[in-house]
Length: 198
Image (tube, rainbow, N blue to C red; front, side, top):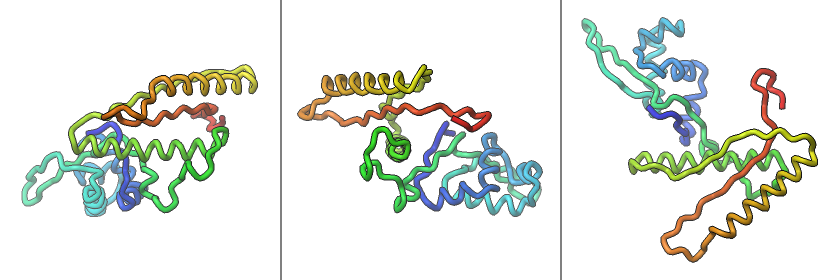
């Protein structure tokens, strides 16, 4: 089971967003059968089997084992990941495009950049999994409390200068066999999970 899987296929995204199937995916962090799930979710086993077959067809659950119980074969399933993220590729026609309106101070542009990040990293993870390799990535996640809007603006300016200096020092267009990497930095207010206010 993967920690996170990115869903790129529109049909798989649709299947995962169904409330019953989303609940089944959550329940299947631990292996379970349709009978076990029916008791937890409060639906008939036949209905659970229908949803499990749909999830399995889209690669969101997998068979762990089959158990023989009298004349019936019980299939024990589990989710293929602990968490799922739906890639903007699943809605390619309306996916955000950061090149449309680049504005480094716009929250909507930041969202478009984040969507591209999910899409790109999802594609990299999928390719690396098929090749049985790891993806070379690096991320920093932290918090800073600014005393004022002026301090926030000064921080952003210093950060931009520092990153520009680093990029100019290490970027080499002529490096034979080199590979281009994308650098994304974002500063946004934190969201209080209890109040959902920034």
